[in-house]
Length: 448
Image (cartoon, rainbow, N blue to C red; front, side):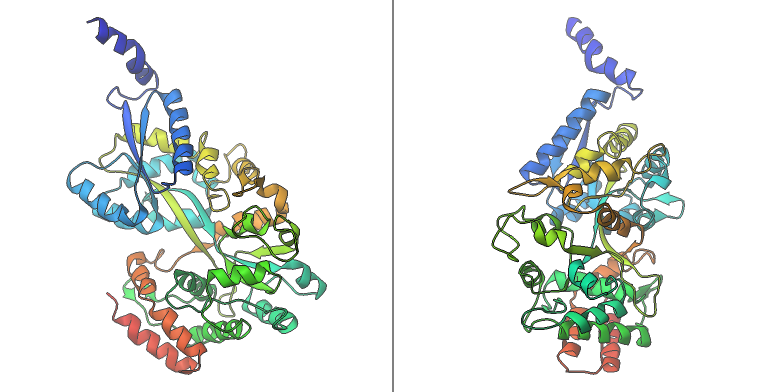
C-alpha cells in the first residue's frame, strides 16, 4: 500500500487540485514542427504546462506530408492523440470526418474571448455553431518594396493593382532596376501562392459553395493583364522565390512578393542568404529602406485581400477533453510566446492579446528574437507601423475555398498547376486574355 499512498500524494493530488480527473496524467500532442530546435521549444512549453497542471505532455513529431494518413489510421484504430497541431487544410474536413471535436475547440475560443483573435483566421475555421479548431499562428504573404525609392518618387504604397503599375512606370529601368520580379516557374508552389494572392485581390475564385464556379471573365481578364504587366517588368526566365530574393537583396528590384521568412534575411541575420546591396553581408541598410504591404486590391475588389497560411491546435475526438482544453488554452495564453518563439518571423500572433491587454501578445512577439546566424527582435529591425501591417494582414486573410467550404477542391485545383500553366501561356503570348479565361474554365471544370 505504501507505494500507492505515495502515488496519491504526488501526481494524483496535483491532478485533483487542478480540477481535472485523475485519468488525465498524460496527454499526447502531435506536432508538424519537427526540427530539433523547434521540438525543444515545444517540450519546454509542455514542461511548463506539466509543472502548472500536473499533466504530462508527450510531444510527438509528425511529418506534415504524413499527417493526413497518420490521422486517418489513428482515427480508425481509436488511437488519436489528444491535440494535433495542423495546417488550415485539415480543419473543416477533419470535423466532418469525426477526427476533431469542434465543441472543445469552440469552448477554448470562447473561454479566451473570440474578440482577442484575428477575425480573418477565426473565419477560416468557422463552423455553423462555432469553430473547427483553434487558430494558433499564421503568416501573410507580403509585397516587399523599396520604400525609400517610392518616397523619393512620390509613389503611394503598392497596395492596389494601379499603384503597382504606377511604380513600375516610374522605377522599372533594367538591368539596373527591375520594376518587379514575378513568379513564372510553373512547377513551383511559389507561383501558385503568388497567383492566388493576385486573384483574391481582385475578388476572383474558382469555387463557390457548390464546387467549381466558372471564373468571371471581366475580373479574370483584369487579373491576367495585371500579371502580364508585372511579368513584363521582371527579368526573363523561369522565376521563382530564389531569383526574386536575390535581385531584391542586390538592390535590383523595386518590388517582390514573398513570405515573411524574408524579414530576418533582409536584415543581414542569415549567412546563407545575405543582402548584397552593399559590401557588408550583415548590414541592416536594406531592411531600413524596405516597406511591406499585406493587403492588395484589384479594380473589381476595392476591399482587397491578403493571402495567409495559418496553423491550428485541433482537439481530437478521442481526447481527454478537459486536459486537452487546458493544454490548448495554456498554449494560447501563458505559453503563447513559447508557441510563437519557434519561428517568430513566420508565426505571427493570431491572438493579439487578452481582453485586459488587447495588444499584449503582438507587443511581446515583436520583441522575440529572429534570425539564424545573428539574432535581433523584429521591433529593433522594423518600425511599429510595419509591425502593425505585418500582423494586420491576418484580419483580412483569405484562401480560395475556405468560406465556401470547398478548400479541398480549391487545393486540388492549385496543386494541378493548371492555373500556373495557362497564365504562363498567356504571358508568353500563346493565347489572348479571353481565350485564357475560357481555357482555365474548361480545365478547372474537370477537377473533382
